[in-house]
Length: 323
Image 1 (spheres, rainbow, N blue to C red):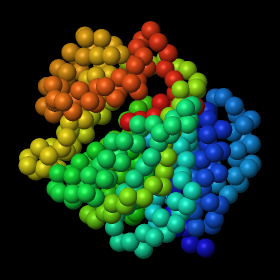
Image 2: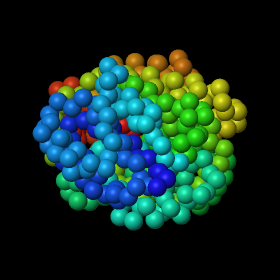
Image 3: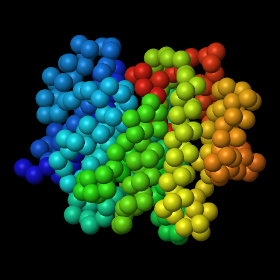
Image 4: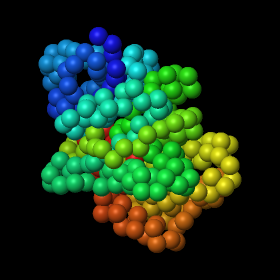
């Protein structure tokens, strides 16, 4: 039978959540599931058991020498055979009945189909806030398909999940993920937003991104924040080249979150360092706006203590999710 969909999953040290994700995907021949292990170091017996329980999946190992979910996703793209490609993180899952929504758009001529995501705090069992930005981009466009809302949908939907991408769009435009420790998906999503000619926006939920506070603990590295700053600068440089000045001005600032994290996690000196870097590269700033204040409150509630050198960070399966 023809493979219709390829689902690409990078994985590291989280066999339990990977098993839950694989259980949420129907075991049907039209879905190719590709799992790429980022050289896991823990629970290897459990990982092997997951493989034995899911022999319909394809398993590969990241042999690039660069530990990164981005490198894993690129390996998955090499082996992808479906007409449509979807991405999932190994600690998330698909919503029951999601395949029916995909089937409805299988023959659609669009390059990308955007769906509304949701999120769950697996510790409290309540809705998390990790989906709010992306769900808002979808709902704003559906409510008012203006040029501004289209620009923000194209270029601020920076995660690879909760959308279905035609594989030939990826291959024709040579789209790849960056092999960096964090924010590996930002440039992929930004370039996808630039090269896609047609798209659909659907207010249907197919994917749930999770957040947990009862997980393994690692120390936050300041270098991760530095990487995210560097990626954002590259992103803005790319957008300046592909967008008109009028369209570029329609983009809402995305630098504020990093400024806030620099201040909360590493102090005023780091804030000044990041702020200066943004100003030097002409990055859009809106530090004193009401929207920034609202964002800061939300981030504070979600992340207080997570970016402090003296504290420990909670991560799922030893992996920090990119946002």
